[in-house]
Length: 282
Image (cartoon, rainbow, N blue to C red; front, side, top):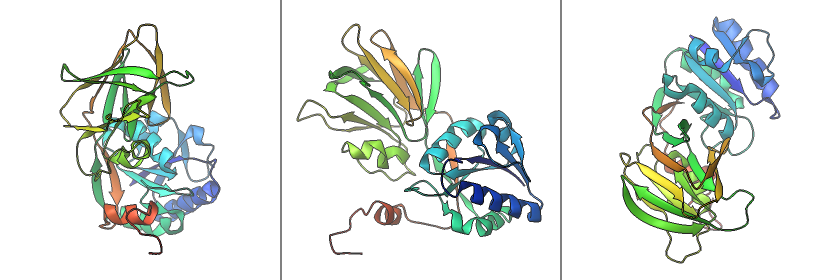
């Protein structure tokens, strides 16, 4: 077994967690390759580029928070390499583990005692460039104070127009991220669909929409000369102007997250987001 390690070394406890993984790997006879821009220690691991990390590993360990897992998902892309998320601080909604039980989990991984959970990915195309998002694709006004006027179509059919601060296209995985904060629905991440949720719409009747996974969505700016910002998983930004159209659809690949036990998505909601818990309840 070969492990790839993509770590957010800016997090407290990251270096200790990396050392623990490398110590385990040395004893277990497991080769570890580490993303070279992570600032990780080299003892017991080889520093490689992002492309080499994916090519040389059987499994990629994302050590950090949810942002690290999102970055790892973009790096893995269509390779179908499974991702093991290890949370070190923060909410860690997507992560399977905390850093307290990493050696035992790695031992189970080596023995094949795990299952894979498949997650839908979005593909956003703008200016001939394709971007992939595990959580969401967002068009928003950026630094401009005025409302954006947006036109949404699906499969060539006009759907609606928005006067808003922007629009979020989210996967079921991303339904508990930015989309949730603007009133979007909570979706079981095992489902396949696309959420379109307006950001602060200037209308009492603008509500989030749910589209079929086969739908191809197009978004454009209604007013000439206007600009917006396209953001992918909160980490990649591209400027968009009124002469351009954004196309959003289900990506041709999925992401596989490693799971060691059969956990309920709704239990995670209650534990980490305190969803459905009345005041005074535990």
